[in-house]
Structures are given as C-alpha cells and as structure tokens.
Image (cartoon, rainbow, N blue to C red; front, side, top):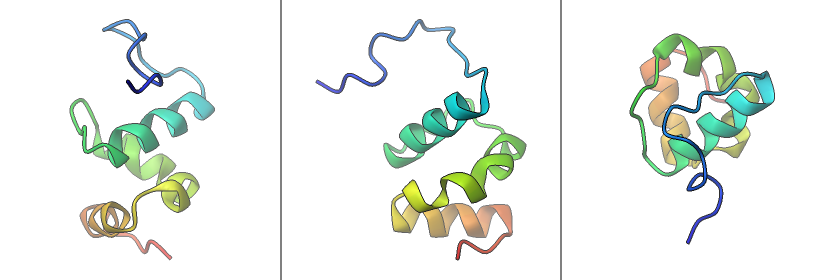
Length: 69
C-alpha cells in the first residue's frame, strides 16, 4: 500500500509551494491527471522536472510548450 496519499481527505488541496510540488510530482508520476490546470503545472514545472519520470517530463514539456532540459 502506498502511504503518501491514501490518508488525505477527498477535498484536500495543496496550500504551500512545497505541497504543490509534492502533489504534482506524485500525481504526474502515477499518471493521475484529474483536476490539473495547465497554469498550475506550468508554474511549478521547472522546480519539479528533475523528479518526474523522463517520459512524462517530455510529454508535459511538449504540452506546456517549454524545454525540459
């Protein structure tokens, strides 16, 4: 059982920058894209890109129109 998200309330939303980064990395790496807004992902992409699966990082880079290097 993965512990990182199973104990979160259903209506939980990140509040701090650190929570957003953690939340996006986990959801992207596990292919759970529900509830994402393009602007939120773009805002944090450069901070989280090194923690993302390489193929998902490339996919998001293309979607956002930014370089992932």
